[in-house]
Length: 54
Length: 381
Image 1 (cartoon, chains in turn cyan, green):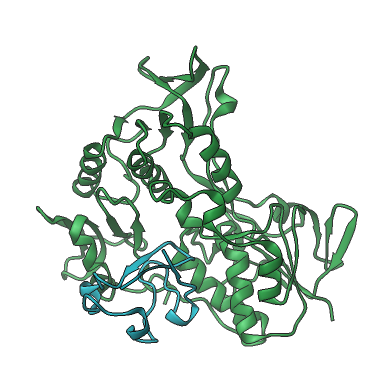
Image 2: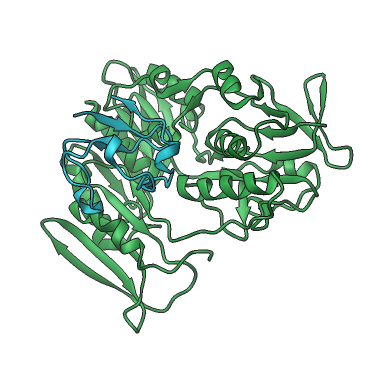
């Protein structure tokens, strides 16, 4: 389980916590998030994410 | 063929370049920047401190790496002095650069507070990575910080600084923080949340003077009260950078005036980001900037496209009390329905037919922002 951050806006996605309020269950790996998902804070598409492990 | 020239290497300039390269890999691209051209996350400037991040750690790439990635020439430490829309050139130091299309991604200047005192010129503001580096140097070793302005940036810095162990005073003219975005109940929850992590509020007051003291500075408020501090940070607002455009004869209002195709009043000159006034909207946030960059990239690569703004909630990154707010677009007759619980405040702005037009959410309630945003009318359909 890893934590990822959006380099555009600093949004943090924690695989352990997931984002239940967005329908992404706790424990969902970054690789398993749908490709049409967009960053909730800045709207960047998943394909554009330059995510880095923190 | 003359290059597309972008002035500015902030989030607007680099995001546009990235979007453009998805559509057009070959047209020569020149990016001219007054600073060092490092790519970095702008919103992180006001929440990187508690994570212990230095300016170098916030930067994701140096200028040469960005240039390679974008197949562009990046001219750093180069301030454009003049634009000549008739000749289609820009002048930088001794060089004249011709463009086929020009994009102004100039950003905004922090508004300087009007202050008396012998240290008024020592007041800092943080609006780019170099400012952040300077700020980090000055606050080293747990220095006390006084923030002027309790708006979005002021509140984020207050939370970040107190989280990093600093004593923080915030001076704000309104009776509650973030008053331009939030209804009172939500603002008071934010005020309580930040007070809970040690932020000391001075609401309903402004600073009138900053003077040197034996150690640090003394900030004098309009009621005569004095605050002892080591660093004064101003966060009272931003003003779009319009001087260069104005001098070139472009139409300017609050920002550089552009239509929904991001075109200015001069042909083949465009603007986006914090410097631009898009169809009457000046919105210095990430979501509108992303929408602008995509539309402008399409226009520059030959597909006429108008920018569309969906409802765009703004997240205020204050972990002590997270806030999500969607402001009401235009004048809508209605009222706030406020629901407060241990989970935070849920304030909904509804018209007479219970149609949702805006919201303000605090604490755990902020998690509903996506679901609620889907019910909102688009800002610019």
